[in-house]
Image (cartoon, rainbow, N blue to C red; front, side, top):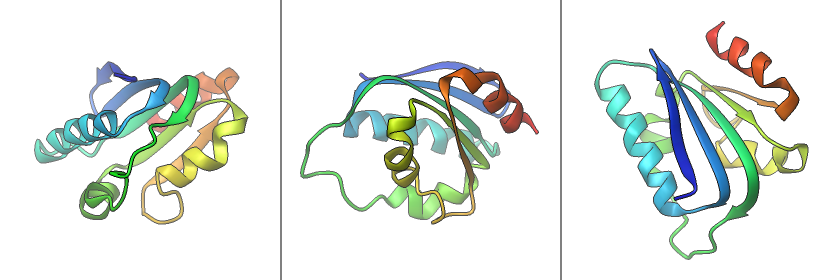
Length: 119
């Protein structure tokens, strides 16, 4: 698994993503977010991306029902990653295509990302 949920603090979920993002990782994270939403929470997600190599090559990546059905129920997403991944990661999470506030932060700005999520 390339993802790890490292902390849950109220409605704030911290996730680390490393190496290759696999479809199974995406589905596990979506299942966790859906569980949160079904329990009445509107999650904020801090995604810390380290040693990232990209996405698994697979024919199965495609239509994302979770994004269409529940994407706007996630209040904010802060992505902390190397600048070279900024455009692709923001596209991957649908910035500009959903109501969720989404911002990108450099690794040196982790504290600012946390403060932005809690604001």
